[in-house]
Image (cartoon, rainbow, N blue to C red; front, side, top):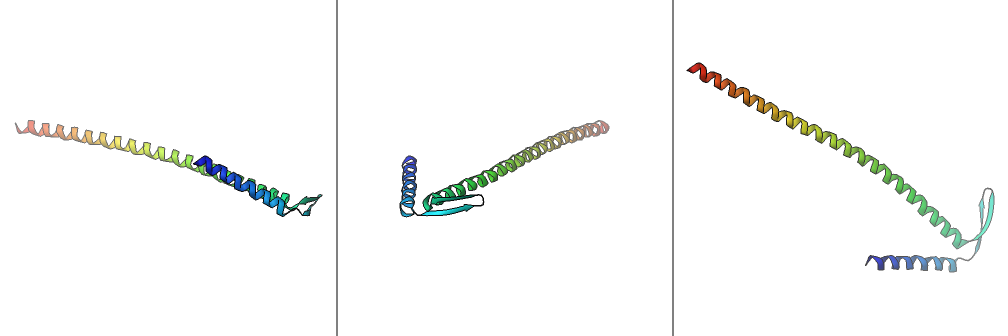
Amino acid sequence: MGRLLRWSLLLIFVLTGISLGVLNPHLVNLNLLIWQLELPLSLIMVAFLMLGLILGAFMVGYKLVAMRWQLRQKNSQYERVLNEVIELKKQMAQQEVEQAVQGNGQQLVNLNSKK
């Protein structure tokens, strides 16, 4: 299914490119400060479309790298907080055990003093 979709999209883009070339064969002067070129309009349209796609891909790539970096930071922060929570739970459990031992010791002392 995915293969059929890819081929049909490729066919649509190729047909669109061919139609651009056939419908826009006019030569256009392109002045780029230093250079002056005379190119078919369809070629200029495709070149600027590709330039836009490339710039868009770079922008998305930059944003993706920034988001991955941010995710890595948040994951390390999460791990630190999780380790801190685990340590605090261990300390609480240890304190409860110590309190229970002290409470049992006091009960034994109270029992011995009653005898």
